[in-house]
Image (cartoon, rainbow, N blue to C red; front, side, top):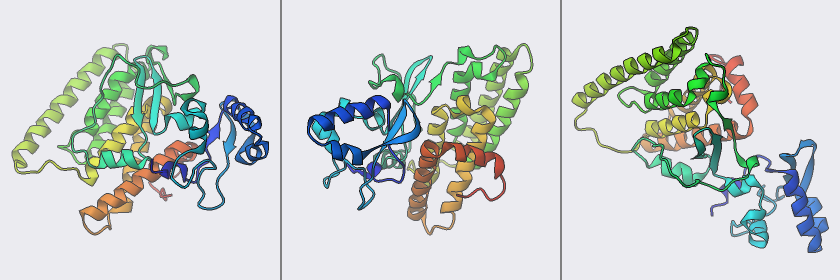
Length: 318
């Protein structure tokens, strides 16, 4: 365990059940005073975010992080005693009509390292076994497209999501070109949704797009026969953008906002890496930018979403 995720600026909140479960544990072992120091109730807290865990004065680590980067609470009471956030991270479970979907948070150094060394496109794999055991409060989103109105594009969200991911992974185009193409596709989808035969026209749009992407891929293969298969900063950014889409940002915040958020992530990453001297330095800057963006999305999402409207094309850096 590296302990990095337990030494960040955000507050780790716990549910009401977790708060009182810990109160009982600490009182039963004669540590009521420590409980009062470690857990603070939030003003107007909700059942799912009822209190937060204090930070250590030295180093800002979680109250329960010891000198070996292990969790004292986990060691004492076991994995199931922990709040859902601590049980699940860096996993990111989503409850959907297709079943439980699971991805990872790029704010975790181990996850980022795996992604940074992966050349192959990220893949969606399927299993008959649940990927993780999680309580209802652990799911980051509820995604059931069939509950959307009949003529809403989001009713076809799963088909759209796969198409968007395919576009983002089309390496015959630059990242900038992929995002521009994705924006055009979303505009077309929203326009087609006004018509009665939306589902049929959507499939026709997909076919045209795949034909275009196939032609670009064939052209690239002819031009870059000697290109080596190796991970690059652009491929890492691709992985991050694909992961954002898989987190269902298009379903949760709308397709247009999805595109704006992806473009913001790309611009921010480029701004942080474009002056770096050499590929290694660019990769380091790209990794740092991605961690920052992931933390913003996880812990400051409202401000991040406001930014795509109020500062798009202006002073959008943060």
